[in-house]
Length: 257
Ligand SMILES: NC(=O)c1ccc[n+]([C@@H]2O[C@H](COP(=O)([O-])OP(=O)(O)OC[C@H]3O[C@@H](n4cnc5c(N)ncnc54)[C@H](O)[C@@H]3O)[C@@H](O)[C@H]2O)c1
Image (tube, rainbow, N blue to C red; front, side):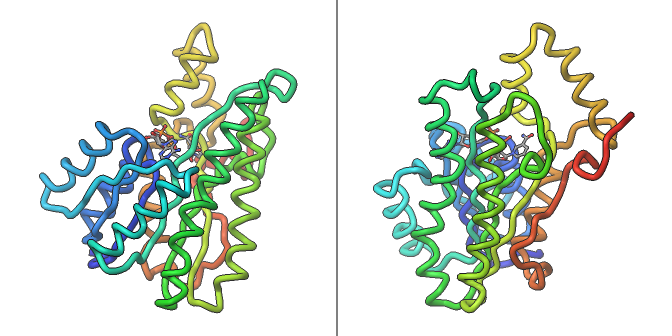
């Protein structure tokens, strides 16, 4: 029970890494707020956790919209009294070289992936500052550290999240709030399955190619990232501040010849 009694808000928790983290955190004793735009899948995730004996509620909010995030944070504080951990996980992809990206796609990806970290943090931080306690986990990606084809806007946003994490850490360290970033490699989630379907004529062949890119020889699974998130959410990581944590099958450190 590494998260016993902790109240944890996870954004984008109806699918993939967020969903897997919600299930794992609850199994470690956390009270989990499953936030997502998708009501059906969000309710499903929360119900699955409760059926397994854990504590979870679904709360709908668009992470880019202060008018929906602010009341959600108020509601969490009303129901649970405090928030120990904010996991800014919600994010979307955007495929294309820079000249191929339409301005509306650029704006959408920047909005969800960067503003979607800023807005929930803005409303949770004053509360954590008052308590002088908290852990914020921002979802970056190993793409913040390496170049990858046809991911211009996505890479730009994940680099921004890593920079944001480091500067946030400086501002909030005096309040005993830790801010760290997760840098996953390619993880087999609906997000990546969609990318494979939409970007390749032969998704199976592309999947085999992706596997070869990993030193591990396979893609990661949502649980692999959830376990790293669990470490950052728990007090076990109390000496980690403003750090990037790689969970990438070795992609950042080297590549296959
Ligand atoms: N899958 C990977 O290979 C990978 C690698 C590195 C980083 N990441 C990052 O991990 C995070 C989760 O990715 P995933 O693969 O689990 O994706 P996913 O698509 O399976 O899940 C993302 C969830 O976010 C929700 N969401 C999107 N926009 C939202 C908004 N405005 N407000 C609230 N919820 C919203 C979606 O409804 C969805 O349920 C993303 O930030 C992604 O960029 C993923």
